[in-house]
Length: 161
Ligand SMILES: Cc1cc2nc3c(=O)[nH]c(=O)nc-3n(C[C@H](O)[C@H](O)[C@H](O)COP(=O)(O)O)c2cc1C
Image (tube, rainbow, N blue to C red; front, side, top):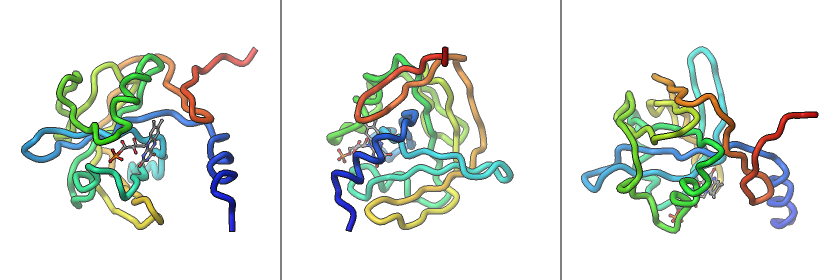
């Protein structure tokens, strides 16, 4: 049996970017959740995946087959935006600037890049769901450094000397 603390600590050694994954939501408006478990999957067809904790309050909005969602890749100055969608129960996009992406899911203002996806397949992943999206549109809004997450802290990239 792997020790939980050691497992989490090992995972924390893997630096990642940070995304906010958004969906159109229901009558109460669009929703977003902070996700670092984002990965490219296939170039042809263009597929990506995100892993969502089964306990995420707004998860149902991401599980409709054929539904749209957007993966918003946060820029270095968007740590506060990451915190805003990292719970508890703070999925509401009201008060945050966004426009409607190609699948109807919000594309947040000021992100480094956004991928508009149609839900392709959903897989069991232990206490998470693996949501595979087919990318139908991409936007690279700013040629700039991404927000980086490493050992439970936000970091910035630096050039190798
Ligand atoms: C930097 C960062 C990365 C995160 N990555 C993920 C992730 O990949 N998948 C996930 O399900 N939750 C991730 N979370 C946690 C969710 O954002 C958080 O659990 C959720 O917004 C809270 O939902 P709840 O209020 O329903 O518990 C991350 C949080 C932070 C701050």
